[in-house]
Length: 330
Image (cartoon, rainbow, N blue to C red):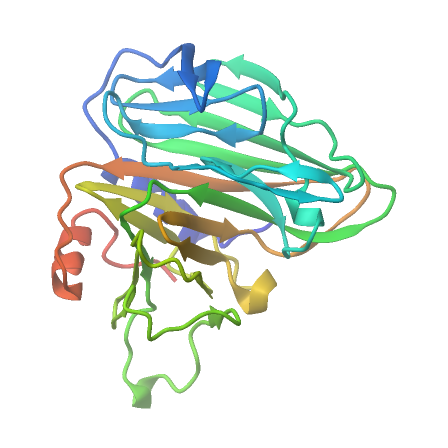
């Protein structure tokens, strides 16, 4: 799949520098318990750690500073469809868009193939029964700092072409704030055309007090006592989305292709909240995947400690500016 090369390369390079921490000797792999599973695989570089289960998936169950809380969340419950019982469980997973029932809810309850090679853990699911897609996630942890590369691979194992988009979905630890970027402000006489879509669902209510829509950022707070669902999507040309909880800032950097088509009226970045449940999502371009063909979609993750965003857009902007690039190459 294509991306806007120069823009994305600059974003990734800047993100790696901004997410850097003092060097450590190496990435270590071992076993830990996570999500009620006793034998999950962990990668740690002494600063951050990533944990993945192998009893189901492919999933990323944990990402966080060593010895501190998980920025990813857990989610109980589930739903039963014609394809079986799908369990949200929590963590980070791979779907394919556009969303449909029951296709999107194909269970991932079976053991996955696992391969560890240096700083990378690769998880491969069996072909989804009836749906015919095969999902794979490869996680690579940098030797130092907080940078994690998450590669999502979809392979069409059917006998016919399928139009789809890779859909990377992170369930976050509740109680925080989703942060999405607005496009840079340009006054009307100098820019008469729209710059990106803001997409709403039938249940979206922008008057909900969890939303704060400003000139530079869209914020969506996660409040346990507000159980009405909310969801929005944007065409995110700025290449990042964030989640702040406590004093930890999680940033995922995502590609955007000006020439591509995106699902959901042009969304490549979405967020959903209901009570304490929250997802921060990104999507690759829609594409026609021939039988046996695969597509790869990549996110880059970073963590920043001791970040205070305050309660206004001005305080948020002051906190983000030292951590994010001040401009995005066009």
